[in-house]
Length: 232
Image 1 (spheres, rainbow, N blue to C red):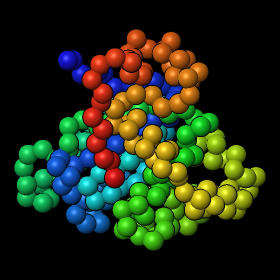
Image 2: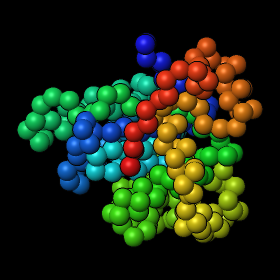
Image 3: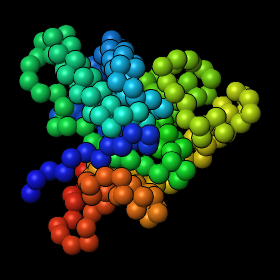
Image 4: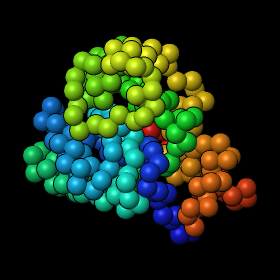
């Protein structure tokens, strides 16, 4: 069966997952994390992609982004992926593939899932038992949104701005949101939708998306079920 093209539409938030081949490490030390962030910053600006949130784990990464053109996200991820592999292989004396195939992504319904996706991304290191709380992990956008670091290249979404009328109010509200956590159902929905490529949202949202693209945005009722893999 032919592989479906990625579901990518300008102006909508996308949850993106990129993983190392066979779950191998894609970041060995601080320089590797810093290089990936620099590449993301450069290519997001070059291609017109607003990056709202990120986390760089040892063997995979998550992004929450809004592309301004339908082709912007694929172009950004292609450029980042190729440049990082060249850098990584040269620096660590290796050759061959680094990624587990192409990146995975899908659209999410803004009002229902965007803030939950941000918290889900921030809590990745906590779920992996790498840190006790999101604020302890240095390689995510969490620090930016709680006011302890400035990532000038990030674009806070309007829903984040709506959390409060002052920076302190927004930061406090976001801390509370992340500490409240993401329930298991939302975690599973955010993971499986990105890995499968099917849109995540209520029926009215998914039906609206289907009118904008010839690409199917939800699985058909019949047929073999999609095998889901773990992202964390």
